[in-house]
Amino acid sequence: MTAVGSRRRALVVRGGWEGHTPEASTDEFTGFLAESGFEVLVEDSLEVYADAEFMESLSLIVQSWTQGDILHDEFRGLRDAIVSGVGFAGWHGGALDAFRQTVEYSQMLGGVFTAHPHGMVPYHVTFTEDAATHPVAAGLADFDITSEQYWVLCDSLSTVLATTDIVPRPGDPWPRPYRAPVAWTRQWGAGRIFITTLGHGVDDLRHPTLHDLITRGMLWAAR
Image (cartoon, rainbow, N blue to C red; front, side):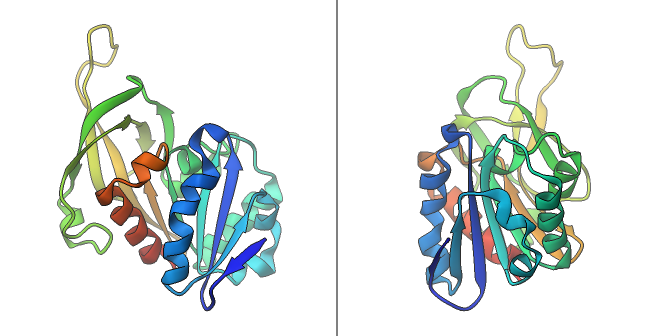
């Protein structure tokens, strides 16, 4: 475990499938968190989630862990920390394509990745009416990006801040465009959750609007 800075604690948990470059991706934000006054702790194992006393000491959890399994005690520790008020922020598969055997994890986050049917494609991201007055997204402008366009199953308890339309191409089985969420916030117990489907790799995360969205999301989620 490594620590930088002082005051409020932010835990960065990273690992799983290397295709999403969990170390390089989270390194894009550890400096920002330290500059924002957090003591930044980095873990390459999920075992830390099972340490209830440590988890209760946190203000924020930033997770980038694609695929894999989470043990019952680890998930319970993560869930209990969030319910008690610890914030959670994550992006792309590091949040939405994790721990698929633990359905309560997807329930807590409010969405689960199912497909990116057209691979890496250029597409448009549109901010919603709710985004205009939300501290995470107020003032941000719609933008274009080339990346995986995530098809996400979600529920109505989240505040959706941005969307994209997945338009059927010849041979696709869905009959009309699917408006998929791209970013949302969510309350779970006393904890705040921020999620975005973007962030396949470092190039995505360096997009100025996405970078602002994620940094704002982390600060908003932290208690």
